[in-house]
Image (cartoon, rainbow, N blue to C red; front, side, top):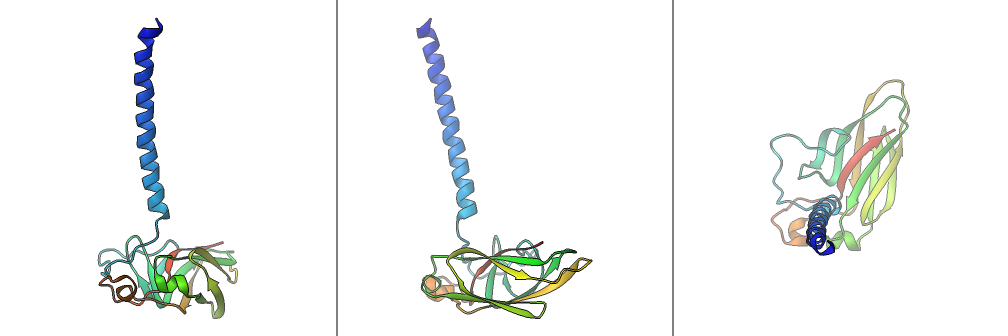
Length: 177
């Protein structure tokens, strides 16, 4: 009796092992997609639908619509909606470690929101959330955000690509609460 169940158990174990391998590969692929740094494109603009980071309503200038989204020029300006009662604006930026100039320089970001400037003197490699206070109001409102980045790079010079844009950091999202 044990011998007749043994092949069934082996087949069941092999099926479970195959399932685990497939799930592992899928999860690994999904995680690497989530955690892989943004790539510098060839500099071609997205001409179909505007793609902005979550939280950005309108780009005024300095946002490059790369896939999935968005490298910033040395100076960027955009509009965000701040909901009623919100008192903080959080901007998440990413500085990749594969750009030699960004890796060896100290990135500095200056934000101007509602006429007030705040400078973040050390924005390290990787993700960083920049926190700015805003005036709470009784109604939703659109707020202008200006960003200035001190350290920039040109992909053609740093990576040997065809992209000649001057880039700074990658804007991942803007949130308010």
